[in-house]
Length: 60
Image (cartoon, rainbow, N blue to C red):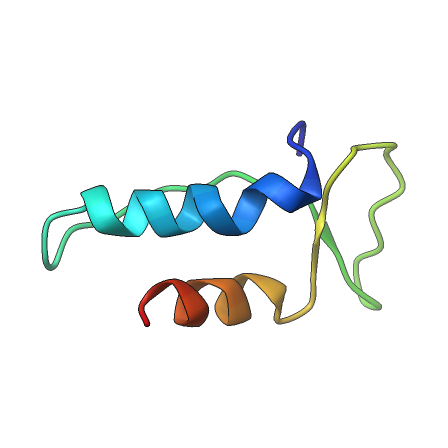
């Protein structure tokens, strides 16, 4: 929420590398979707499907 959008993919990829196999991560983040638009002025909010796309890219 308080991060710059360009830093998110690298941070998630690093988090995936540092997590033990079968381990979990907890991410608290704002979402901005058609059903639940983000009305707060956060510098970053995930769009629908964006987190899934980023995590799949980080596994490559």
